[in-house]
Length: 404
Image (cartoon, rainbow, N blue to C red; front, side, top):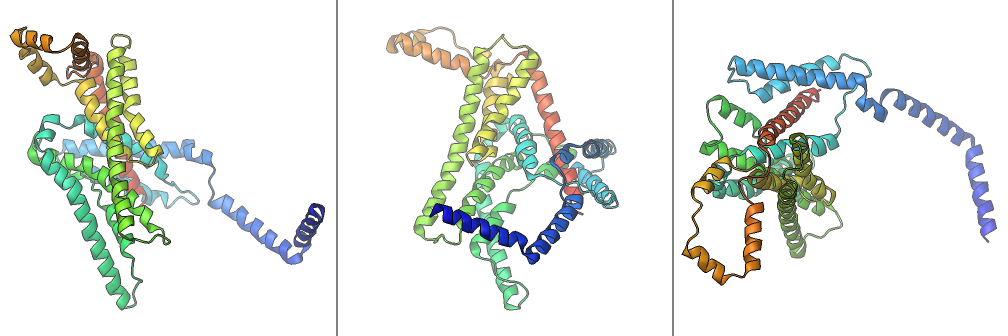
């Protein structure tokens, strides 16, 4: 039976190959493929070609010059981000004049290469005391504000599409898709706003600056987790009932809390690592390992489809507190260290020696004095800001380039 089946299959393939109509179809497909490969299909090596890299570097350098001119001449009506977008618009207009050339943008570069340094720099640079002081309004705006913005956007889009559908202008959009769209655009970009606030003299200790900055950190993570949760409801075979809604809410909590746990655990592991290797690294290696530890939680969460942004924010907070250290806290701790007294003796008497040793070791590892050398502590912030500025400039320039 198997030999007969093989013979029948060979006969069917031969009949198809010898059919004149199939020969014409193959010839037509081959010609279409040739045209596609010549004009549309750029090889993977083209993405890193010298010409493409030259254009990218030139645009970023020109954006840097424009940002410097905006700051030097104090052009407050034009934010630096808008200046970079205009540079991209001009560059995109010029590139449209070049035949058969397309500077495509890979979304993986944006999510996996450009976003982590920006988010980590923001988490590292925000004033922690001001953030803790305004934690309640920041959390309220980031969580409930994002959910409210997504819901309002979904209702507007749903009602608007239904109204236009009644006039025959477009088809109505399902409400779950409207919710997904609302979650997609509810993530704000505060860079331009913070740039304007900085230009008018506000610092990272002012209330409005800290609230906007802190809300933007948490807002990105909340909106991405909400979007990933709603994507599961786009399955047409899924019946949306109370169980499905409960499962979606649990997925939201698992992703948010799980990403937060990964970030905190990674920051704690980094702290233990720097404590154990204290004095073994040169300043160069210290800075290098600092950034390796910073981006590990992002790719862990991204690999298991959790929120890398939430993880990086949590890691940045922990590493800034216990690896970099807080200078004000160091002085305050040194000034307020109580001498040995009867309280200490009573504590020694009430606790076992092993518990006291573990507590003393824990306080030594997770001390706000930090574990970086003085040189590394100075250069970490500088290198982080360079990477974040370069990525932000590239993103805004890309926004202008792809308007065409």
